[in-house]
Image (cartoon, rainbow, N blue to C red; front, side):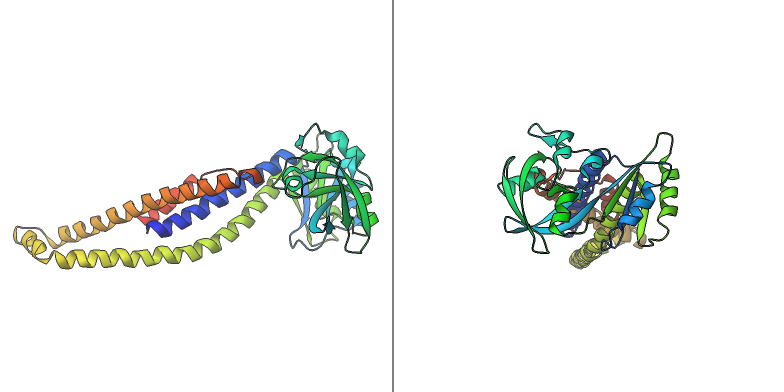
Length: 325
């Protein structure tokens, strides 16, 4: 029971840290009131759809992120293409090494911005020149002009949409970010955007809070599958406890007979065995929870540079412990 529960708790702690890190990072960076995405992850929003949203009276800024894979210095890298003039109003970069939002204005067909961990892993610094080869075979030489810290969301290379056009990559937005004019609420803005994109059924319009809840739900679905597999190990432990109690009862036949002889009832005897099983389970549950939290802490700290933080799902841990008992 200790080993099985330790695995379950470890997964829960690690997943909680992952969710907290990702959502917190997104909440710090995203300034948009409404987010438009394709839930299948395969169909970006065409430029005509973005233009229809931009024409709405309650909209202030509409811009997005185009996604494309390219070879950067020989290794495959995901590029994020943005509109330099607009993107700073919907996204907050955590600039390092003296950077600021003014760097966005310098994004053109020959410059790029990189995330800190990506720069470290690929030995890239400000001023480095990198060779980018698109899927069309076109080649560009880009100069790195800035670094930011965001290992959970924008964790690769950010370029201007001009680079995408030169590489022959599609500039349609995989994620469209929308902000409203003063006085326009997020719910009202989302309703207007939904009407404007009625002709694009694969696109889903969500408020900022709705988008965070959607991401949490995606992670929870994966966790449910892991919990179902790990529950088998916990179920096996139940038979281990049963075997232990069977031997305990068998070896104490004379003791039980003596207790019965001096007046112990059958109900009291059953209660003794039941309490022993609960005590065994609680000991295993407490130890398993402690070991799982320890493993989760160690692993999370090892990925601290990647933006992962240690966070405990207290409600889940309490449920696991109660179920173990």
